[in-house]
Length: 117
Image (cartoon, rainbow, N blue to C red; front, side, top):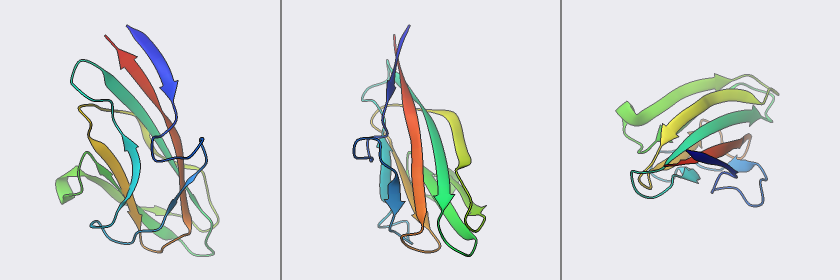
């Protein structure tokens, strides 16, 4: 099995992804997993809060229904990076999305480790 570290696909050149959405319907794309079921992405996600108040962040893992959501997770004021996901697996083009209690104060960073058969 071979592996390849990858940037989160929602990032530009590895820069943090600013969470602008406060609802599931307009959630920001963090990463789109590898297509198909023979390979897999192991995804790390961290959140940084640039606000003077704690902010809840939710991560839709493969979808945005309640049973597919991590959180809400409270990120303390002026804190981060806080680990949200540690090598969580995803494949088949499923999408990781984020939304927060306040717009434009949460930054998402991380990486995907792509494993190929």
